[in-house]
Image (tube, rainbow, N blue to C red; front, side):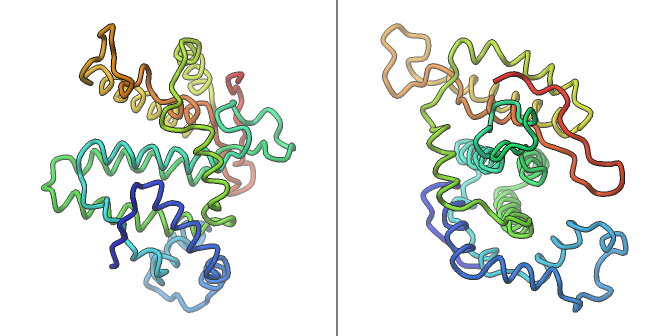
Length: 274
């Protein structure tokens, strides 16, 4: 593996976007997914699974970008993990286009009104699983968990039909939800409404999304409360006054159930008004 000194996980996403779209990545993925060269090495349930079978092919063949590991994978501190969560949230919001954070699904036929990516949602919830499963492990094992997570994120992103979002899309999303964009009082008051909408969903992954986003928001709030000067009347400007707005936007960006068979596709039922 080759290490990259990316400034942040989001910078790594930008590097992935540039590398994939400028080096014939989509053509490479199409060829791998169409290849008949994969024999009996996979579990028999993978072949009829469609996308999961394609991911297994991409992981098995291995694109060079999967082995270009960011240096931040060596940092297992909570602050570095927070930056990774924020980057993956932006990746998820980028998949929803112009209606990210607006309870997508109200205009299913409208350009740019698509739901959040089902695959992108799993990249977010799986990071929560990686974090908690690796907590009891030693430092090197936690580093290896982050390396494997990043390589898998690359493989899964590159297996999707659209591939990873372009630099322009990622930067546009980051401009809508910059690090200094925090919840207003009105935003904070909307959390219960958004969670109720998620609970009402038939698509269970929207419930998981709301749960995770709210937990991340709570953790953000706890971190803010522990900052020097928090609660003081003369707070330094470096102290944010409220949690990042991206957590709420992610919670309110529902996904559709993918069409994995007859009668299986479902749309979000009750997105909260944006």
